[in-house]
Length: 464
Ligand code: HEC
Image (cartoon, helix red, strand yellow):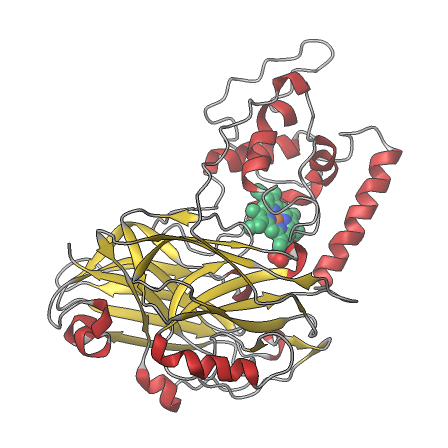
């Protein structure tokens, strides 16, 4: 939060400098490592007079990358603190960009590329990364607008079947973080499969993430009661939609930059009489928050080739109190490993997988709260090399998501699924409440901001 303020100040400062000095003079002071930055490009045409033959220019080279990988969030009214949408903005902020590109914090994409590959990967390809750094190092020259890349084809539009706004607009009341759950009625009266998922944030600058949970018919009253028990639209929730137990399934998650997803072959069945709880994480900065009425959009099908089921994976003992994270410790690790094929049929009969049979993991995610440092989900293969499904080396509660594996993983009897979480519960890693950093306390499993979790969510199917 304070970093954000500092950034805004920096932006104003950059603007002032920009007006005082000829454009392009003060950028390139980043000292970024730009070696090897010419991969795949023409050799620099050397020193003709006028020096207009820059290695890379905004219009010819950088614009396409910034548009695709940065301006999806760095644009007016969106979640990022400054815009990179225009040539002037890109040049003005160029000097600020290199550190975030170099250390990989921007664009935000939590999964480690050394572990596995997923659909909708937001990370910056190596060649683009080097090109941007070289462009910045050269002083971020603009070049000739005539070199602008042609407009790419517009993204295909999806004909959504359901457009479900929050029941009424909500004004966030807590700062800097307000976690709120809203119950959305499920309108279909036949079994349907959710094959496409999208969230349309309304108050864009303050909507930090949204997670949709599917509530089976038998549990809907529990959530309606939670809603009714609190004033105003929705109810307070954090990390999970509350209500106890694991009857809810994770239907989909959204954070800024998440693209709409659609998969005609695979989908999650929804029974008539179900409900959806949409958990919103608002991140209002200060002052009055704009009202928000975010919408969930879904694409449905009557049938699919591969019905998917979303199941939680964790150590049941942790819920019973064995996941202890002592106050002040900067590294606490808990891990759990089990052959899930042994009892998946008993615990999750709805997944359609029988005990002792292999199953397929299509999508994976990890969940901790704010003291989490890193987490991983691996497969300890019987007599074969271990396989990494998901590794998040720098856990950030604000950038959660589900990751659809490019190559689904088949888990066979004998394979052990291993979940590992590490926390930093030292004084320096405590969250802020009302502007004050909280004191470290002993932590265990729970649903509150003062609790922790270590959970993986798996989207599975039988082998087809
Ligand atoms: C998915 C949304 C998103 C994308 C894509 C994105 N950013 Fe950001 N960026 C943010 C947000 C939000 C912040 C504010 C800090 C935060 O919340 O982490 C930020 C902050 C920054 C900062 C300030 C320093 C920092 O690390 O906080 C820089 C520099 C930056 N972004 C550069 C970039 C560049 C360069 C790209 C493209 C290569 C990019 N960003 C892509 C959302 C995004």
